[in-house]
Amino acid sequence: RKEVEQDPGPFNVPEGATVAFNCTYSNSASQSFFWYRQDCRKEPKLLMSVYSSGNEDGRFTAQLNRASQYISLLIRDSKLSDSATYLCVVNTGRRALTFGSGTRLQVQP
Amino acid sequence: ETGVTQSPTHLIKTRGQQVTLRCSSQSGHNTVSWYQQALGQGPQFIFQYYREEENGRGNFPPRFSGLQFPNYSSELNVNALELDDSALYLCASSYIAGGSNEQFFGPGTRLTVL
View 1 (cartoon, rainbow over the protein chains, first blue to last red):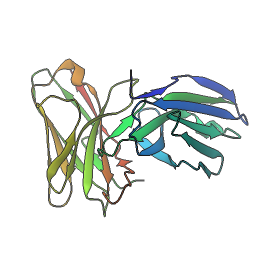
View 2: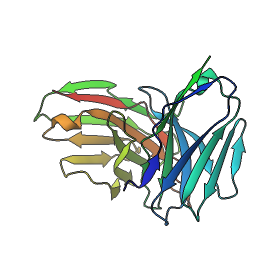
View 3: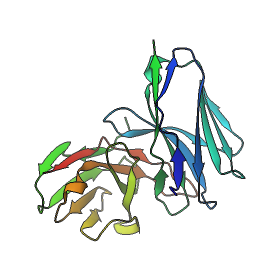
View 4: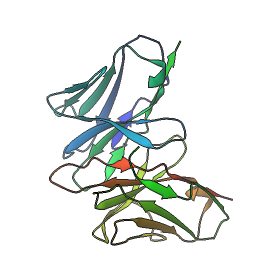
């Protein structure tokens, strides 16, 4: 079983739609959680950290459920520029980040 | 931009050769981590350097080695290249403090092994 599992997609949604991505992780000792965004053939960029209380940054909302070992990302009012691969990332305190394989989002005009 | 730079951007090598990739960390950061990203996969942790010493290693063989210099820049060396080493190699810069482990990536080096 992979340490971090994501639905690979692709998710094809129209502009303005709301889309949600989910991710599960296997190591209950994981301490910090992130969503990264990666454009085609580019490096991953930190989108947001994820906190137990949930957090929001503009159109993006992230939630963490430690009991279920589940992380989510909600994108409201999708823009064409949101098209990318979204990587779910956990850290167990060993300094290394463990990445999921990513969920591809394509926002259609 | 993160301020993390990597060189070269692209590299083509043949099986059995050796390669050195370079990374300059973001100003104020003291830690460099290296990741390998194969096509269609998430990045996989190779190792991390902190204060010029290896501070953790992923499931990669010893032919993957590294260095960190006093200015916190770093090198990744791969010996005896294999076809499966073809990938995007990413360097990530961070500052170890408390529980934070936000890492910021450079643009990567795309290595092709023929």
